[in-house]
Length: 401
Image 1 (cartoon, one colour):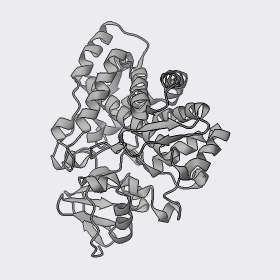
Image 2 (cartoon, helix red, strand yellow):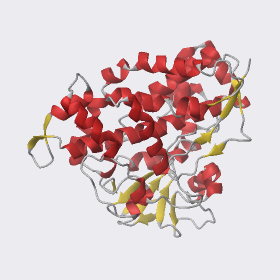
Image 3 (cartoon, helix red, strand yellow):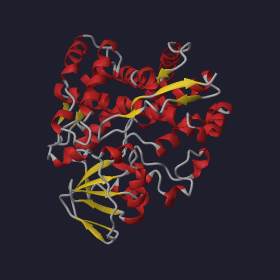
Image 4 (tube, helix red, strand yellow):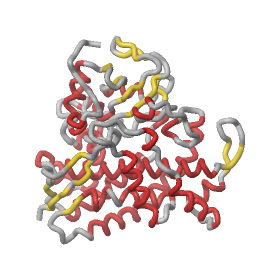
């Protein structure tokens, strides 16, 4: 590793608010970077991350995918996909993936669009409104509710719990124990669904039989179903909501107005626009892994037992892959390599296509209402205080009339 004064620290507020200059220096000067203060390694180039993500031999998920989880030595909990490697991971993933079948996801589109329209109707006459309150805080949780069958009266409670568990004090590390979501909110619902079966995913999970990682054919335990519900709900609402915030922020910038007008003129480009938002401003900036075996990278050995951060947000702006305009939205990137916001390989995000669909639907409805776009109040906008997902606490827009 080349000697350099570059410094990267996800717990420093100043860096977290704008980490991209640090990422660029890491890519150029220290692609295998070690932070001795917080005892982690960081990998920042697209090509290196693309190889590391599916390499479960060296980069294990058995202790979670968040730095604080790994360093706390938290044990795997069956059914918690974020804490598993194969073979148990593959079995549990196969069960949870039933929630995200292409047919099941596609069937939600009319309901998602209807709900988005109703949310936007509420602010149709307002001069300005908060993207987070109207869209980010509502649409993803409603969608997860549709998918899993969560009663509407429970949805906001789970959304609030997710946000609370990810928040940190400025400059502080996340409390790993506190960050684990409480399954208690689902207990009453699962008990009720057992007594009131229906033709929904939850009833199927309650009744299916499968062969577990010990070769035993059985049904899911109640605790396993609680964990499945908690994982899916926690993973699916805060991240997708922040994606909507970044979409509104980026497309409100003057430098992207030509692109926005292209989408207005051709709504089929909405999907490509969302893909570029995911590349340029991913919600999850890092994927943490436990280093199971020594790993050689750029002449440096990352030792077994270490914690490594795969900086997918840095990979999304790597000029070696995306070209000189890597920091600009560009709908002509359709022939370029895929962004790695959702990961790659065994642990690729199950809800990736659902998140993409939600973002596309929201953008399609926005361009219908606001063909001239909107301005963003950046003076009062503030990045939320977390070390896991990067997004806005509040984002006020003023539609251009």
